[in-house]
Image (cartoon, rainbow, N blue to C red; front, side):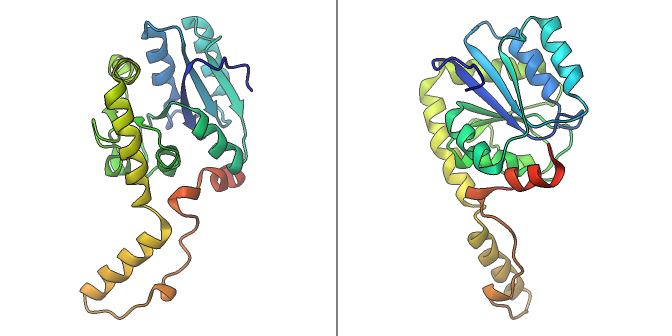
Length: 212
């Protein structure tokens, strides 16, 4: 599917194509990676798409960068399991549940170490964090996961375990415990619906909402 060869190392980003999501840095990093068997798949649409498409042509990587467009939540989960590595290079990110979706599929994530992303992309544990504009750093992170199989497999398992911490039932329980610590009385059923669990992150619902 998407005309991607089966034996490639596939990087996946989920979300709108925008300046804030900063997919440009991964495209530039890809052009610096010596291994030509690395592909980059972007799920989502946005006002940055034409710019990014032209950039891939300028850098000579247009045959290895695939713009998949809008995908349903179920399809995103399927694609995440088929990928090898997640990418979340946002300039600004409140939390970034797309990263949790990727980790729930047992994928390490290369990400910008900003804001809420720092809560789950732990450098050398669940992924590799770089400065949002560090093209060379992201390129090195990609090459590290390709060459260091032990680190890659360890981060795969750690990523899955970390994602489970954000399961909605666990989050609700922690909210109740925190509330009771400050003298309140609360039951899990009193906590409002927080939406899908980490294993069903907002990737799909966000797509439905924003049509990205």
